[in-house]
Image (cartoon, rainbow, N blue to C red; front, side):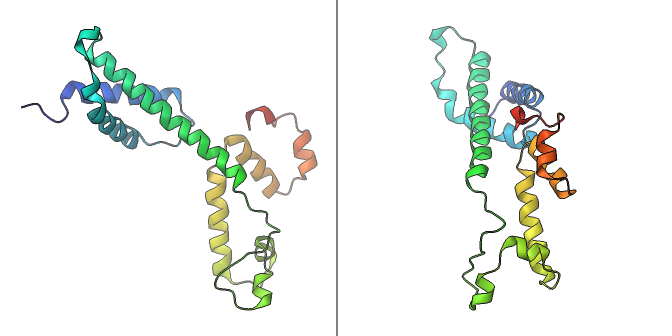
Length: 168
């Protein structure tokens, strides 16, 4: 009886994922997650191997896993683009199903950040949401956000030669 996953398959999967991690250093993937996804994908696709076509089974596995990792990377890039379309303006009113009165429905994210009398817990949650969003940005956009946070005028940032808009 064949084992579910043989040693050579584990070795091939590790090599493919290690190579991917070296080539795509700016991704946020963990080795273990990719490794597990690849092994599961291999278990589903292994039966498609046809020895009569002349390819080595290890080569077939490398190709299958390479395509799987390419699909994962493409999905991540698509998710990054979604951020742009899902952004919310700081001036947009916060609509909450829990707000009962008119003054609460007129609050904006910006007013919560600026309001020193606002509830500290709201500020913590808002900063947490902002930080989560910033974490998903590219390195250039993170740098851009940090300059804005430090008080640099946007016009000055846009004219800086060190900021490369082609890599955003």
